Amino acid sequence: MIKNLFIKNFAIIDDLSIEFYPGLTVITGETGSGKSIIIEAISVASGKKVDKMMVKSNAKNSIVDLELEQDSFRRIINESGRSRSFVNDTPTSINEIKKKCEQKIDFHGQHDQQLILKKENHIDYLDYFCKNQDKVNELIGVFNNLEKCKKQLKQLKQDLLLSKEKKELINFQLNEIESAGIIIEEETKLLIEYKKLNHQEEILSFFNHLQLKLNNHDKGILSELNNILNKIESLKKYDDNISRFSNLFNSIVVQLQDVDSEINSRLGSDEFDETRLSFIEERITVLETLKRKYGGSLESVMLYRNQISQELSEISLLSKSDLDLTKNIEKLENKYNVLATKLSIDRKNKKADLSKLIEDSLSELNMKRARFNIEMSSNKGSLHYSSKGIDQIEFLLSANPGEPLKPMTSIASGGEMSRIMLAIKTVFQDQNPIDALIFDEIDTGISGETAKRVSNHLKTLSCHKQVICITHLPQIAQKADNHLHITKKMDRTNTIVKAEYMNGRKSKKIINNLFIGDEVIA
Image 1: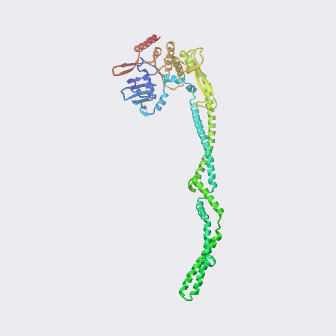
Image 2 (image 1 turned 90 degrees about the vertical axis):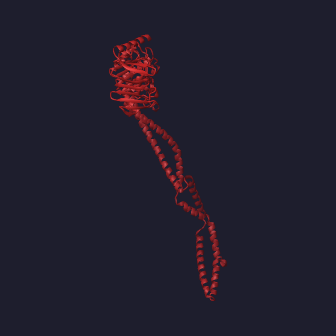
Image 3 (image 1 turned 90 degrees about the horizontal axis):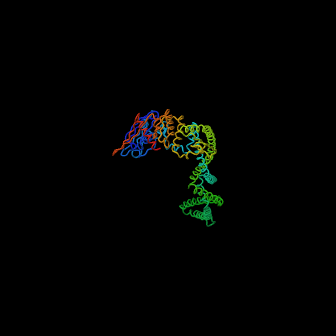
């Protein structure tokens, strides 16, 4: 229950404090006196969006403080339109205030009428009546998971499509690298052997020429040296010093004979192998091609091979994820269908009860022959999935005899709309833990007997809830337990808004003025 409202520098109000009491409180006052500002202040304290226009001219900030039985809520709005929020003097978020106040206060105004006109909201009213909130929340969770998995699967399919092409490329590259049978040390050895084989003819030609120089019969180096040795042998009998030359030349001959032996050995083993040279050239070409394509060195080629092998493994995992996601989607779809079907059955079983209660409530509000019906259609299949199930719900109304049932959007009369809203609110109050009901324009477009019926309805509601209602109708004002009258006075520099509870004569006088106004309008 609302106990107190304090307003400072809000709209045209300087400073105002209002106590509220149980039962039916009506708020009266001239047009523009500030009645709706009071309701607006309550809604702002309850979490409504604010703007800088709410701050009174020449004020730095605006303060709205709402006291309930267990909690107090305060909003401080600065001149730029920003606000700070408090619950029980503790700073908090606006969402926390909304969450708490939604459980305590229910507002009825033009916004609520717009909500009930929209077909997409009708399913929420029916579910609330069926007490399906837990089931709906569970369904929403399954639906969100289902949509998430479907989105992931769609992305995965796209990735797999791209991966298919990539997989083909990777397999080609892996085959190219692995078929080469790379050994890191091989390249150096091949290059050394290639240089040798590539110049083998030149080398063999040189050794043949050298061998010829050494052993060319009488003209060969060895033959000449032997002739020299023979001559030394014949001369040393004349000069003992010549003997040392014999030793030197003997040493030279022995060394050259060793060279000749090495040349013979080399010429016997080093035949030119053209097949081997071709193989080495091809092998080096393969390795150079791989280096050019995959990194500049054989080490880089092998690192690249390891990298694409890992990518290939990841692509294989994608295929497994595809399978897992598909299975999970199937499970979620089955769970969704079970939950949605249960909800659909509940709605189907209860919609007639809700229709009857609303019709009865409309009858009490002087719409005696109005017909109210809830149209329900159910769709199955993934094309019709929604977070609220497989059902399409729409409220239909025939306000007058002979008229067909039509969608709520076809209601033209403000008086009819107000009563329908009140009827629906009344039906749901039995299930609603809310303590306070606030009506801003409930008497729009009604008078006479209808006004009397509406006043009785409000009075009945106030037996169980605190009801606060702005009214211009004497029929409603007469039923008040508490009559709050708003006045506005202006001087040259300021506007003063006052709120005063009227009792006895003062209240009767204001109500009589309302009757007079009603007669004049009529």
